[in-house]
Image (cartoon, rainbow, N blue to C red; front, side, top):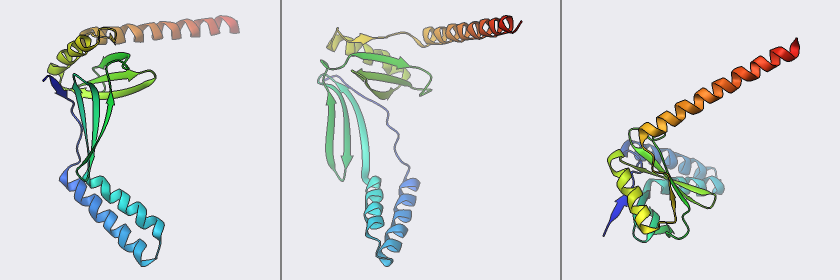
Length: 167
C-alpha cells in the first residue's frame, strides 16, 4: 500500500519535562489557593505532553491523526473533497510545504524535497480532477523574482505619478 508520511515537529524531551514541571507548580499553587479554574487549565496544559500528531497521504485521502493518551483521533479528507494541491518551497526549507486545500480550508503538510514530486504524482493518480500546481523550486523562484520586479516597477510608476500631480 502506497503511503506517505509528512514531517511533523515533535517536542524535545527537555521541553516536555519543562512543561510538566511548570504545570506541576501551577497545579500545586492553584490547589493551595483553592483556585479550581487554574487547576483545570494546568491539567489541560499537562495533557499536552502526551499529545502527538501525524500527517498521512494514502489511497483513502489525506489524514491528520491526533494521538492523546494512546487514543487516536483521525481527521480525514477524501480525494473527492480536495480541490487544490500546491507546493511552497520557501516556508519549510530545506523541506517542502505541500498546501492541500478543501474549499477555503488549507492544510500544510511538510515532506522531504526528494519525496514531494512523488506525493504530487500520487495525488494526480488518485483524483485527476484535483488541480495540482506541480512547478519546480526553480520555477517558483523565477516567478517570485518576476513578481518582485513588477511590484518595484508599479511603485516607481506610482511615485512618478504623484510627483506629476504635485507640479
